[in-house]
Each structure stands twice: as C-alpha cells, then as structure tokens.
Length: 268
Image 1: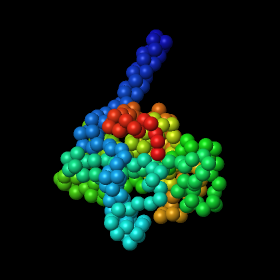
Image 2: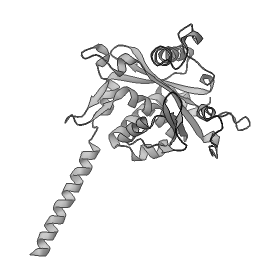
Image 3: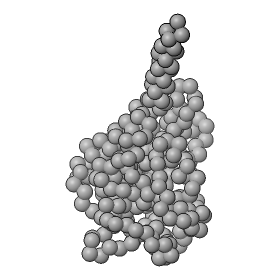
C-alpha cells in the first residue's frame, strides 16, 4: 500500500514539474508577434539612416544626459571616431513612423593595427584586459532611446506597443530596449562574436532578469557614474534565454538578414 501511494506521489510531482516547465516556456508567450506589430528592426547601412541615428544620439547624449557638449555638434547630430568601424541598428515605431532607438557594434581593427576598444581607453591602461583574440570581439556602444518613448504619457501615440505585458500581468517586457538587445545579440551570435560593454551594475542585473547573462571582466570605474566592464557571450545567451525571448531574438535576426542580405557577409 505504501509503495502504491509513493508511486502516485511521484507521478503527481512529475506532472507538477511538467506544468512548471510549460509555465516557464509560456512566460513571455506572444511577445514576438506583439513586437513586430509595433516595431521594425533596421540595419542602418545607408548614410540617410545613419543621420537618423546621429539625431537620436544628439537628443539623448547631448540634450538630455549632457554626456557630450552641444557645441561640438552644431548640426544636432552626435558622431564620433568609432562610427566608421561600426554596424548601426535602428528601431522604427510603426504607428508613428518614427525612429525611436539605436545601438551600434564597434568592430575590431585589423590584426596588424590592434587599436583598443573604447572601454579599454577609458581605463587608461590601469587594467590589462587579456583579450586573446581581439578579432572575435565587438563592443556594444551608444544604445539610446528617445525620452518620449522611454517614458511615454498614458494614452499618447508613442505609448502604443512600447511594453508587452503577459496575460496574468505578472511580467513586463520593455520592447524598445529588448528589440535593440535582440538586434546586436542575435547578429553577434550569427557572426560568432563576443561582446564587451561598459555599464552600470544595476543594468547588468536588469539584463539577468531576462536571462541575458553578463560576465564581469574588470573593476568598477567612475565614468559618467559607476560602471563595470562586462563580457557577453551571445550564443550562450541564445541557448539559455527564456524560449519566448529567444524566438523574438531569432525573428529579429531573420528580419535583419532578409532585409539586408549583405549582413551575412560581414564586411566593415
């Protein structure tokens, strides 16, 4: 009798375990469809599209955050020396037709020149980063989202589709930032690159909420606030991220590749 009850209990526990797995899988169910109903990821491969990116960066980095001087950019387009060795991504908000966010991947220079990445220069050689193969790495940089879309007013047009909430209202996904993460993570995974980023610890914890794992590679530094260098492993992220978010990232990757086939060739 005791053996029979034990078997019943084991079966019940197994069913409960399966239910938990299904629930985890369905945590962000529907996020991909919701994202593409409201946003279009774009590879900014033309000068016209890059100008749109520079405008967004000016509004965020010069006007809002004061990280860069407005006097340096009289045309109200923030640019720097790394733009020429970068791939740039944009998000377009479909209901308004407005470009609302951007991010870039700074690529390594040739093996002969071995120019430092921006985050290494910020450390000013106080830390020796052991980068065994610089050609396999990029740096995430200049992620910017317009303030009106980061904090949209209720019932405003820009509020449409900015967030995705699960049916039970327990979980929320900020679609613009997640779309930008999806662009650089999925494409870096496609190319086989690892990624450097210099970010606040709180942002790294925020990434972790969605399964985007970061690996700290150096000490905290005071640069526009307390920031830490991290390494991301995109292929590892795609293997371990929530399945619904992996579906979103892979859909973003396919959209970028199908709209700009040259991306698959990787020539900076």
